[in-house]
Image 1 (cartoon, rainbow, N blue to C red):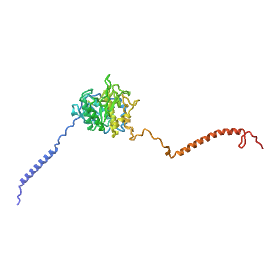
Image 2 (cartoon, one colour; image 1 turned 120 degrees about the vertical axis):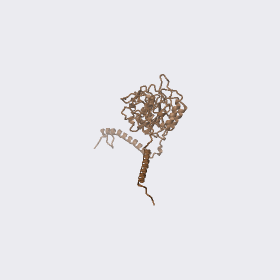
Image 3 (cartoon, helix red, strand yellow; image 1 turned 60 degrees about the vertical axis):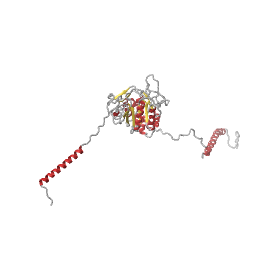
Image 4 (cartoon, rainbow, N blue to C red; image 1 turned 180 degrees about the vertical axis):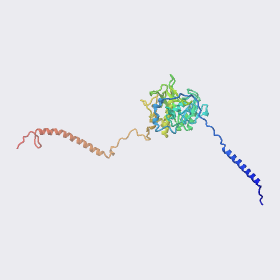
Length: 411
């Protein structure tokens, strides 16, 4: 027989169970409400010189090239342009959202290429892919493209550092392996085997390379600049506002095309201002051409680097002689580079066409008959013209058919 618990014991048991359940529920709720903190996302660094506020007019280079005329066809969407330079700021209004995480080969790896202590790379990137619609009278040539920043230059000074060619070669390899479609090289260095090999590998991977043709120092002879002078690299010279060759721009047979390279304005890395470079340089001319290459790559993704280069050359505003050592094939033209139909035949015509086989012509007899009819008709017409005045003259003299002239009429 089952014994019942006293009521006081039952009540106590119920309270104990409720307490245990309440404690367990609170423990479970407490565990559920404890959310581990998300790792902090590092903000783009602010480094480099600040610029002047209040850009009031469109830079002449943008007016000259008029990239907006090509934007209905291509804005560079889907194209990544690697800028191997002094770094690229990601905080300027023109470049917000345009700059990817890159790499620093020069002592600041944590900044992922987004720290530009001298401002050179940021200006280059702004010219290539600065956003439009920011309210400023400035945009990049290809505002739909993205920038992959790679820092190899600690400053904007020229250098013969033996380590630099290897760093640039490593930067090119890294850019190729991380999705670059176009690589801008607004720099000059020493020609070295590792650099040549990196250029060859990039071209083999269908990456377009654009490089500055180099800037001449006073009373210095023109010498080929590398990597611009390597085969397959698009070498860019500079022109002024009148379209003339900039005197400091290196000349050479390796120069392919030209772009604005004097009195340049671009975004500054240390804020929202702009910097001016009155002396310009082929660095900035190369940036303009990289922007046009991005437009072409976006509109015609199947083109090889050689075909992109050919398109830029054939659609450029050519000099009278077609090509020269100062400006190559002329100033790039964004609209024509994107829109022109430049198809090539896979089966070029023979040097000389064979003579037609007249015997095989089924209409040759008709042509012969028509020719003789024309000849006979011409002769008859000539005889009629000759005979008409003779007949008229005979009638005036009393000539009638069937009798000799001057015979008296009887009857």
